[in-house]
Amino acid sequence: MTNIVKYILRFILFFLVQEFILDKVPPIHQYVVPYLYFLFILWLPFSINRFGLMIVAFITGLSIDYFSGTPGLHAAPCVLIAYLRPFILNLLIPQETTEQSYVEPSIQSMGLGAYTFYIVFFTFLHHTYLIFIEWLQFGNLNYFFGKVGATVAVSILLIFTTELLFFRKAKYRTNAA
Amino acid sequence: MKNIFIFIRIYFNFISFVALQICCVVILNKYSKTHEVYFAGISNEVIGKVNKKYDNIYSYLNLQQVNNQLAQENARLRDSLKSSSVLVSTNADSTVTIKADSANMPVRKYAYLYARVVGNIVSSQVNMLTLERGRLQGVYKGMGVIGPQGIVGEVVEVSDNYCRVMSLLHRKSSVSAMLKRDKNSGTIEWDGVNPSYVILKNIPKSAKIYKGDTVVTSNYSIIYPPNVMIGTVEAIRKDNSSNFFTLKLKTSTNFFNLEYVYAIQNLRYNEQHSLEDLKLKLND
View 1: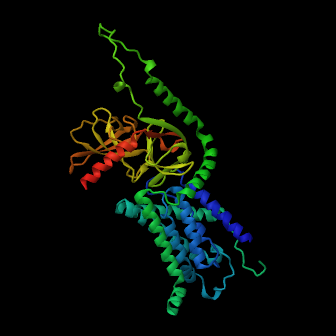
View 2 (view 1 turned 30 degrees about the vertical axis):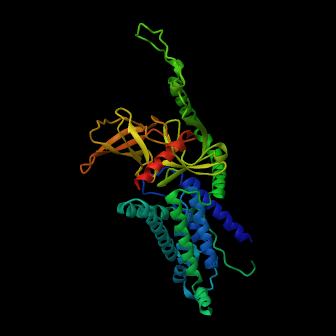
View 3 (view 1 turned 180 degrees about the vertical axis):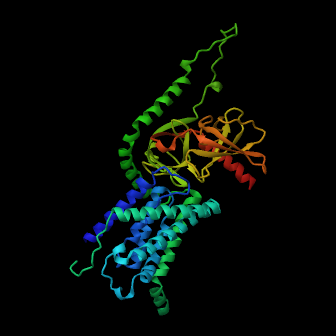
């Protein structure tokens, strides 16, 4: 129960930060757009059911979309990363510990290398798909490559800053809960 | 039949993934093509309310700038009042008065509704504003929106108490504009690069343009009154392959700190719109 409350609070926090801080910052350049909200999906617990994960991702994306006036634009990449997340996690987590003792992906539970790969891969995937959809509507090839490069760099910077600022205590999964 | 169920069970995740993706694309397409209200009844009210909460806090931070904007606008309006100018006639026979008959009476064409901006994004490629005025207060889709310093955008979605405005800084916005000096008209678009600059296209090369020229809304626009400030010419780009200039304009409106705007009701909107629609149909 407390876990659900925790994730709801986290969702609200990510949402507010994305919508009312990151989206309000005057852009440095057309290409540099800070995205952080999808980290919510990457931080969801290992144990979540795949279908549930996709629905949560869809809702996350759609709520961001309605505030920025582009329904569907963020929802599509969110669903994509939610769909692929279990595959990549299976690859990255050593098979002996499939019965994971940790609750959610973090540096401690996965190791720095694997976690970095996990973050960079999904950031790249999310942004590429997002900007690809945007690019279909307007823009040229420079716009596509420039924006993917710049946004991925900014996002990874933001994610690791978040990781340093908000240290998540990695909890063992116990039967007591 | 049994096989179908087994198939669905095995590929349930993939099928739901594809279904959600299709859902996203449909929403996106439907929305971006028509700017139709999509789930708008609920979502718009919710968005408006949340945005208003945020704006209540934020508005304190730039009260001073807003005050300045409004004071400047007041001064400009006072300037254009009839009572602040006098008629100096050089004609000896100044006693001739024109009979006021009904044909010469001015007819009101535009009505202004003031509205508070509760949501405003400038950092994306498709920037929108949320205003605290809706259907119940007389806002309808297709109204023009101007700020104290110049034009802002066009209403694209309306709910009961809030409306969404496609800002001038939207990749799909297109506004008919003209040079104030010689009335050459063109189209304003945004290239997505910098929120302080927009692009004016289709000005013929025969026009004489200087840096700093004023650009205003044209007489042909159906949603804006003519001669509302848009911006000033910042740079002139000559495209050798066409007969038109592409001008870079500095917008007169500062989109970063909009607080109060006016939604403009064109009282003859329906008449002009249906007439122009008719013409289009004839061409088809």
